[in-house]
Amino acid sequence: MRPRNAGDKIDVLRKRASEIKAALEAVQAKQRQQEKADDRRLKALIGEAVLADIENYADTTEQAKKKAYICETLVRNTVSQAARAFLKIKGWL
Image 1 (cartoon, rainbow, N blue to C red):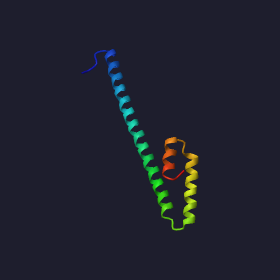
Image 2 (image 1 turned 45 degrees about the horizontal axis):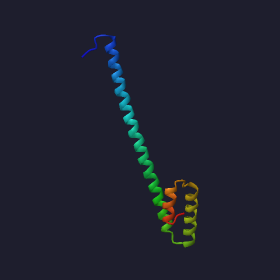
Image 3 (image 1 turned 90 degrees about the horizontal axis):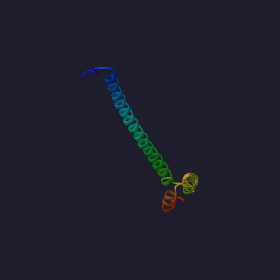
């Protein structure tokens, strides 16, 4: 169906612009979701490696030093009361 006059053509272009805007917003939302998932995975992998390093260290003196360093880091950077409570229960604060 072809637009008959300038008003119809404007309406068609506005509709197309609206569809493009919606598609762009969907792509951006999906990208943000992927970035959040990547961030969570990165944090989990780093945390897992740090914990494994501490737990598998043969020298108990060095192990204690590493755990103390991580505990100090957690104290400085954990602001959520719920997270602090969890870490305390697990023996990290």
